[in-house]
Amino acid sequence: MRRVAIIGSPGSGKSTLARRLRDLSGLPLHYLDMLWHLPDGDHVTRAEFDAAHAELVSRERWIIDGTYLRTLPERIERADLVVLLDLPLETCLEGVWARIGTTREDLPWQETELDPEFADYVRRFPDEQLPRIREILGARPPGCRLVELRSREDVERAIIPGGLLWKLATPLAESVE
Image 1: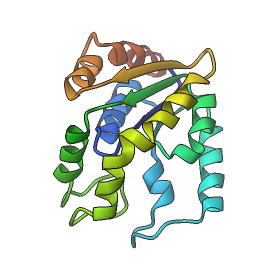
Image 2 (image 1 turned 60 degrees about the horizontal axis):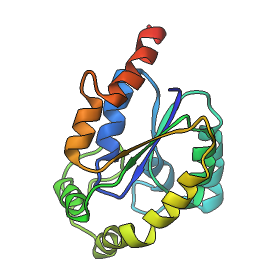
Image 3 (image 1 turned 120 degrees about the vertical axis):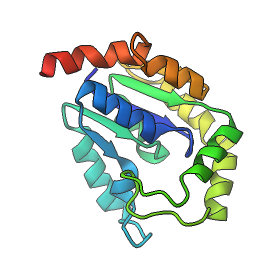
Image 4 (image 1 turned 90 degrees about the vertical axis):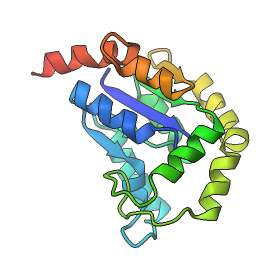
């Protein structure tokens, strides 16, 4: 496990899982939201994002947190592990609400309220984004392993000592030390 893509709906727990995998594996963690968003809430141009994304994906070791469907095929092509968090919609909405007012390392500003357009995006994610994600994942290279987790309990079972992600991450951490 040298290149890990963590994808799924906003609020599904991608960033939390990514930090736990980083801590286990020693792999560098990169948040696509930090590439796209600026501290004032605006964002970089597509060309700027694409250049930064291409440079990031070309590296030998990474965990990349973020779905960003338009550039997902490039990440999947290079990843040796993809973790898809396919949690229930209500769980994701609870996750989005829970982070309001908290400082996060994965976003360049603190959310003070739930943007209605963003909430609508989360509500539409299962019908509009997930089918395309599954299509892209269906075309992933043979050496790219897919792990799908469907609940917070599944995530916890996968990351605790002895769990699947723990087993995949810890041999790398031991070889880096």
